[in-house]
Length: 592
Image 1 (cartoon, rainbow, N blue to C red):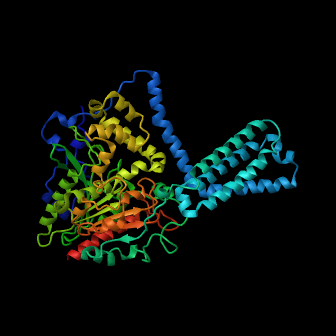
Image 2 (cartoon, helix red, strand yellow):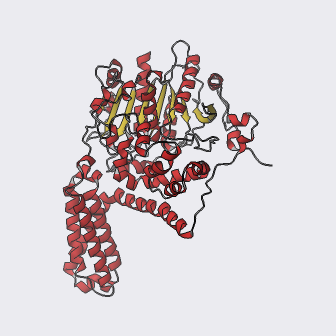
Image 3 (cartoon, rainbow, N blue to C red):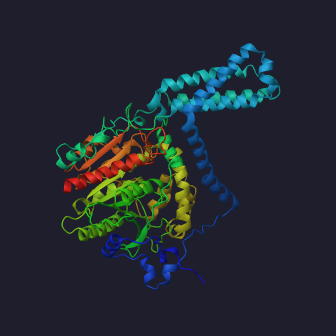
């Protein structure tokens, strides 16, 4: 007997409180996909896996190379850059120790006739590479300046060359060549970047809270809800008195380490329903209800959360947010699952892309109606909170819908306002995008491959299969599939500030001028995935239109990171989630 697919089976494991039952009654949405209710066989179709046929073994091997090697190299380089600040001085210390030891022994005794030379060669190479990272990486330059890394490199190179000329025994020539080649390559890499880094790589906007003093709502929020997060406040992130984790040096570390050490909240349980859309599809809504019945506390906000690119309701930072505001603050949290993710089907050809905002409007409208019915006197606040890709979408939705926006407030965390600027962000495309591209391509091929093959030419499909970054996948697959003219056109449609001329951040965006609700943009200037240049010109942005856009920019924090304290595991993603919660609760208080 063939079992029905998961979207035709209710997945609601916990008993519901009277408040939750009342909420669901007003929401009036099915707990299984609408296609399963019609009795149609469309409800049991398998995923549309790719059946792309290679013309030769060589074509397949080349494709496998592009799918595997760039991401592995990116991961290796990323790990090197993550710990270069620690590895470089340690390697230099070992070289200094070897030099001092050499002065007390004969060269032959110290070199060991080549028996111990392999480890010393590896230490020298690792030290040279780490020092090169410190000297050329914009994040280290922003933190330390060029002189620090340059000094470490000069000392490491000098001691390495002295070591080269003292080698004895078997394999001497091989090891000498390896060290000389590595040293020359590192010198060339440094020279190509100095005098130093391109000027536009280093952030030239101030990290602070931006808002319009002429808007009474944003002014009040700045004085109350966000006061602690502005300069000098108790929760201020940067600076000598800030709460940031002091031993995480770069945006890479502040992004990656939280995902490695932060605990997953396994106590969160969801009730899933499906929201029909205009094109006979349905998006899943995973709802967390407070564990205690809060029927007498109807003025609590309802949160609509938009997750990251390849994520869902089980992302670590999403679970962290749900644990905080649902389990501890007794607020309802609804996570809208992007089309096709988390084992949800797409029956037609309208798959997810970053410029689609209609699904958000349908979800926000449904929740606003529930809020109106649950609290007929005042109506509860419906707040959107987006992370990464979800942050880009929620900001674009608020801007495009203007006064028709169904949200009461919104928070965009680590999402750009003008994603066209990311096309020029070489560092992110080289280090982080290859890792994300592997997972995104895998999802597309497994669930949507057949759909893409129908719309893409064979050459475009092959370029998609070999894409080594998110932007290349967008260029060769998403743009063509969704009938955009170019990747620049797609990114402009995706962005809340995408209607201004390229590279002209001082221009007021008519789209952003439409914002009619408090919108808080939270972004770290050392974000390694979404460049600071996607933030445009903050002073111009916050004064556009009626001045409802607020921007909380931190010097450090990474991408959906902001680790706190010496042990970041203790707080998890608490800093950014507390900002979102406090901002929304500030809006609630202003409405009371």
